[in-house]
Length: 127
Image 1 (spheres, one colour):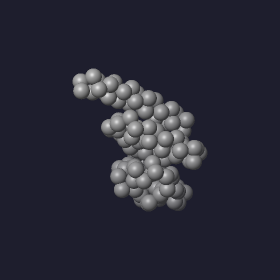
Image 2 (tube, rainbow, N blue to C red; image 1 turned 120 degrees about the vertical axis):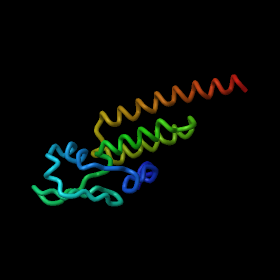
Image 3 (tube, one colour; image 1 turned 90 degrees about the vertical axis):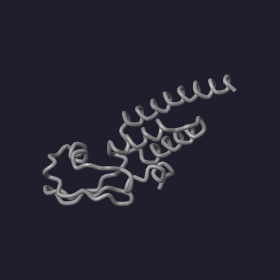
Image 4 (cartoon, one colour; image 1 turned 90 degrees about the horizontal axis):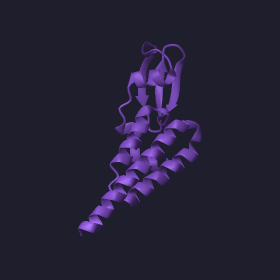
C-alpha cells in the first residue's frame, strides 16, 4: 500500500456509484448486480459475466479525491510531498492510470503551487 493510497483511504472515504462503474466498464447499469468496496479493490458483481475486480485507481472518484487533496494542501512543502506521492504511485501502478489523469493531476499541482507561492510571498511582505 502506497502513501497516497493510505492518504486517500478509498475503501472508507470514496463514494463509488453504480453509474460511475458502469460508465468506466462501458456497460449498462442494469448489468451490475452489486458493488463491494474492499480494502484494496472494488468487486463488481455483474449479471453478464460474474464478478470483476477493479482498481480504485481506475475510478473517477480516485482522481477527484486526489484533486481535492491538491486543492486543500496548505503549504508548499506538503504539496511537494503530495506530488512526490502521486508520481511514485503512478510509476508503481502505471497500468492503472490513464495518461490524461496523470497530466490533469500534475497540472493541478502546478496551479496550486503558483497559488501557494503568491500567498506565501504576500505573507512575507505583510510580516
